[in-house]
Length: 263
Image (cartoon, rainbow, N blue to C red):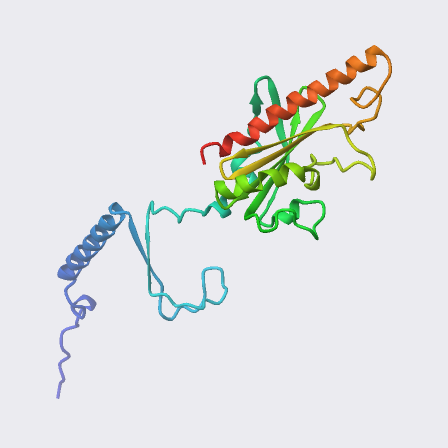
């Protein structure tokens, strides 16, 4: 008996027709890209993480397995409070040139703090206790054309009334506040009283304390200073030295008050 074998079945006869499936795949892809385009045009991107994903992109364990996170493009960050933004770089940027009525200087040091006792020479006794001082900024302004430095301390108070109440105390205790020195310059030896000019002004709910000295921190009783006695020439030089300090002090104080004038 002869057994006849059936006709050979081709490989492509074993696969289902693919024409309709390919068309369907292309339609689904086109629809997907249309949805992505609409979301992108509206400024919304949706990022989904797998519920089984246990690590972040950096490989560190992720405590929250967030399914979907939406970020709105262009959404502004929450504004900083006044205390958070009360920093030297905001009001006295290092790149700015400080000029006023012929006075030219640059910022040569900066610091700030929330505790007003921290800018006082005696940290154990706060001369502003119970006067609502909310923070401080200290900057050093160094003249480019003259060997003069000015230390500016800005004290921020709860409101204009509190600042006005503290004004007399700051004027009487001006020597109790630290001098902000430029980088590389330190306080003179103990007992040496540098030749200086001081100005304290009320600006809104801020008080500016400006002290100007010479870079060499010459003492008030040194030859050529205002405290020395001698020939007429020495007296004239002393007067010129004092006048230069006074001019620098007035100008630095004006520069210090400008950022807070309309606050």
